[in-house]
Each structure stands twice: as C-alpha cells, then as structure tokens.
Length: 183
Image (cartoon, rainbow, N blue to C red; front, side):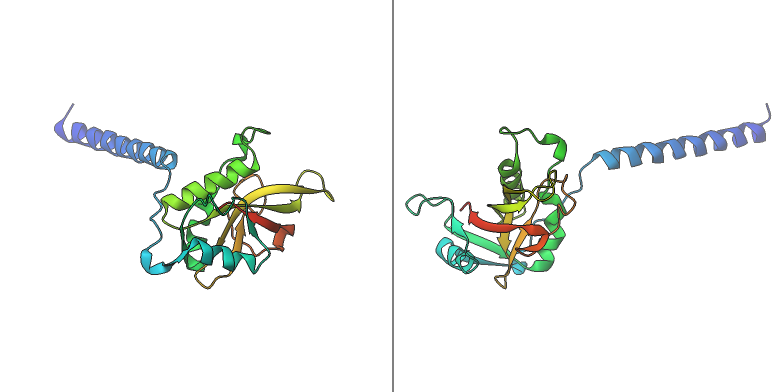
C-alpha cells in the first residue's frame, strides 16, 4: 500500500472515530441531569416565619404545623423570573407514584427539598383539586406553594404525570384551591 493511500485510510478511520466519539458524548450528556444554579441572593428576600404565614393567611392558607413546633424560622422568597427558571426542576417522575407510600404529599415534599437545595423557600401545600383520572371528581391533594418577592402566591404540581406539572400557576388555576401549608 502506498503512503498516500495509507494516509487517506487513516483520515477516514479518524473521521469515523471522531463521529462515534461525538455520538457517545451526546449519549452521556443526555444521561447527565442538568446542573441548576441556586437562586442568587440578589433575586430573593428573606422574611420571618410569622411574616411568611401572615402573607399566606391573606389567601386563607393556614399552617399544618402547630405554633409551638414550627419547622423553619425564616423563608427565602425569589423573584417570579427565578421561580420560573427552577420550576421544572421541582418535579418528580409520575412512575415513582405509589398510593400511601410515595404519593402526592411526598411529591410536594420532594419539590420542597429540591427548592431548598436551590436556596429558595417552596413548601408542601394541600387543598382541593380536580381528580385528573376521574373528571368531575374533586380530591384532596398535595402540591408545592410559594410566594414571590412581591408576595404573590404561586402553586406548582410536582408530579410530572399532570399536564400542568413543572409550571407555576395562581391559586384557582387548574382548579387548585389551597388551604394548608407545611411550615
């Protein structure tokens, strides 16, 4: 084989290997969850638990915990833009659902945990919602709730099996009526 033919063959093999390497890198990238940056402090405000509950009480929402045993003493509230940025990262796969073991309030608590890791306060909320599997039926359900820096209340469905999951919406939208918050 002449040197020119051998060189051409090596270039083709190198091109094929480069293409295969790019395909493998793309597969690895698709398996790696995206890294979500925490909400910057400049995009949040901090308020006391009592202030947070007072703001929620204006919407008729009461705490699930007793006053003598509060969960957190402060809340860190983000701008609506930052809440929108992290919203989809607060959901969990519907395939995790197991009645009475890993169900709606557990999905809400998982969303609360994920938000805390992103340095913003999101809490488990409960209230009445339309049953997505039985049209016309209303169920008591757990989901996520927060306030933005302007003290607007937002709800989020953390179970990605719901059509409106992973996006903040106002109370009343999607039929959600909140009455309790875990704080």
